[in-house]
Image (cartoon, rainbow, N blue to C red; front, side, top):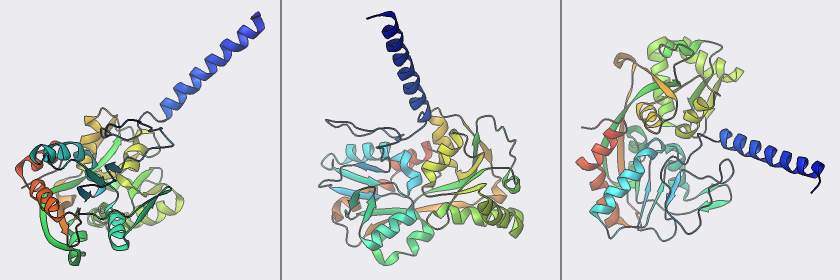
Length: 307
């Protein structure tokens, strides 16, 4: 190989290595953040093929649980604990999409994600208390198992010097806001806006800043909001406390601006066993586990509250 060809060859290798590093850097905070199940072929491709909110065995499951999405961080520990208690139940399928989307899936019987159509029926559905109570006709039983409260997620070091909810009126501040159309937390945050700053704060964040693009309404809050903070696309995100606890737990550079108790909202999480659950025995066993002290200790580990 002559000198010119060698130089071109080495330059191509160098450029390829830079591209690979840049591609890795571009997706360095991307999910899945859970531990994926082991398979003969593992084909998660950052930015292209990555489905973090469908978890486990979709083929012939023995148990199907639809979790309100912000509980995704608890799934690994919950399923491990449940399987230890019930080793005969191994094939479990879990969805951790926004609760409003899951509710529509329950009502309509199907959901399409990319090119995948899912008609798997859930045995258990968990969501906020208001959502569950609006769907009581679907459930044979319901149970409270955990609580959560609001906080503000910001970039490491709080570069915008956020102090609380009233700061969100700042016209230059980029906000990642859960869409109240399908995110229960969105409606809770709207209540907090009105409580802290009246209609002026609510209108500034949810009307003026939505119109000018500085408030971004998420489609899947528990994934988008942390990623927008981590990649510098948003300055602040109202989230559940558990979201900040978990991102710090896995070493991601975020910080928290605590919302005082008098300005905060406490969410109540309930589990409902579906009347038409395909696996009613397994569903009851899982709800029993979800309300056990072992499961409650898992929720507390990730920043939730329990009785």
